[in-house]
Length: 271
Image 1 (cartoon, rainbow, N blue to C red):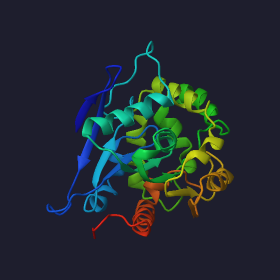
Image 2: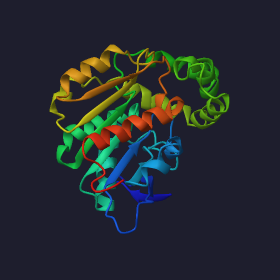
Image 3: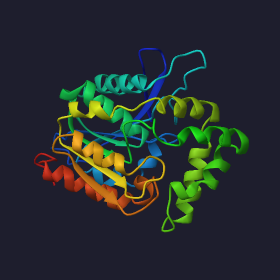
Image 4: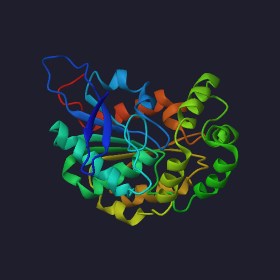
């Protein structure tokens, strides 16, 4: 795990994995995790991807080993976009393949809108343009009443279906439930102010959208609206109501990513 200092002094953690053939000059692929997640959530993806790409995993501020903004420091989606840009600058990376899961996808969408020349391809998993029209705000009083882990356990059907490995679900609950409830309340409250659907028309890179076909946290219809606004984008639906497709259907989601990258000519000269 490495860290760099963002413009406001917070330390942001990240990892870089590269198991490419040593005579190649691989391209960079950046993974941005979901809310309440961290870099470890991509454990099933990295081994395969790191054979073809230098894989960067950034931990969003307030998550994992990244610093958490204090109560008197501002926090916004724009801060997360800025962190992403500053990380790439820190690493000397001009362009990336950008993969975002859920809230990490909000960051990815905005990064592609604001910095279009730095994104080669965009891959979004379970990620609408913000969650202004979701029921996420109703979570907050329940989290205060029950505690974060207990709340997640009682609403786990929104995230995993019956096919999920119970050990995976338990691991997820331990990981996600260990977050600071006060910061997660702040994070969710802010994300619920965002709906940037119309801004998606500004995305012009090759884009793939993958979503749960019976989505319960966002709404499945939003993904078709996204496809209509991002010219040339491809939409794939996973037949589940569980929002956490990157966890519960990791192999399938990874396969879709690899197929999409290959269809667009990546990795260049690779396997």
